[in-house]
Structures are given as C-alpha cells and as structure tokens.
Image (cartoon, rainbow, N blue to C red; front, side, top):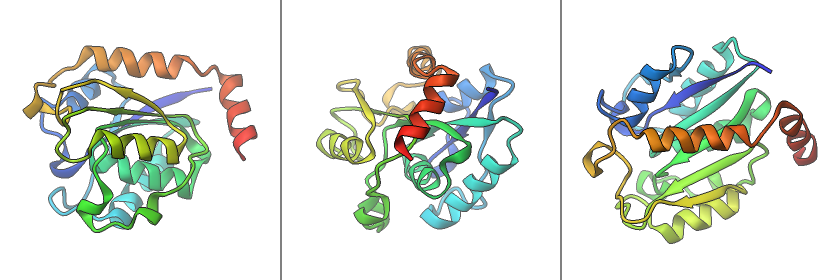
Length: 186
C-alpha cells in the first residue's frame, strides 16, 4: 500500500525552523496543508482545507503529522472521512476550549491508528487533558516530560528523535494490520 506524509501545522503555519518544516524537507513525498489564513484558525474552514489536501493525495493512504491546532483538524478530518487516512501523529494538541470549540465536537473514538505526543509543561494543553483526549480518541500516548509546546520556542527545531518515533509508530502497522485495524474498528 502506498502511503505518504501530510504535514498539518497549527496556528501561524510552522516557521522554517519548526520540526514539521524540517521533516517536510527530509521527505520529498511529504506535502504541507495550506490554509488561507494561518493567523485565524477555524475548525471547520481549516478541516475543509485538510480534506482537500487528503483527497488530492496520489497515495492510497496518508499519515497526518499534526501539531497544536493542526491536531484538532486532523481528528475532525479522521472523524468525517477516515477512508484515506493511514493514521494520525498528534504532537502537542491544542486545547479545543482555547478556540471556543466544544469538547463534544471532537469527542470521538478514532477508527485509525493514532499517537498523541504530549508534555508535562505544555502551556496550551495540560498533560491531564492530553491524557483525557488520548483516551477519548483511542490513541496511544507518549509523554516527553518537561519540554513545553514541542515547538521552536521550546527548543524543538529539526527533532530527529521525533522523526524516529513517528517512523517507529508507522512501522507497527503492516499493510495487513492496517486493513485489519480498519475492519475491526468499522
């Protein structure tokens, strides 16, 4: 099964030194979701752009590599149309309430593999809330400890160890395991 990586930035679009931008440069097959307005996130508008990017992919399935608000739209896209999504790698999800999004809007069990990568000192989502969302979504959770929002401001530029974590997460799912996962969760 041919899969590819779709980079899903959050607020402001992940600057050039951000780990998402570095990962994108490492993989010529990776694509970045483009938003019309990176400074005013809107769940439904941004999700629609993400869904267009997913539909435009020439791969059979895409892995969504999301950060912050990008995690929220990735969950929403997986809720609405999981068929072309291989899985979600959700790094430092934002708190939906910070964007006036009701918890019910995203309170779904995902039907694709997912991993939440969180921190004990993320100013945008407490570890307790990250654990709660991971449980609701049916996601695995990795706590990186005292590392802030896992962005450039907290010391995460290239983040090669994160790339290894992502690759390891993806490698857990052979083509048959992904088929079985989708069949069992349908």
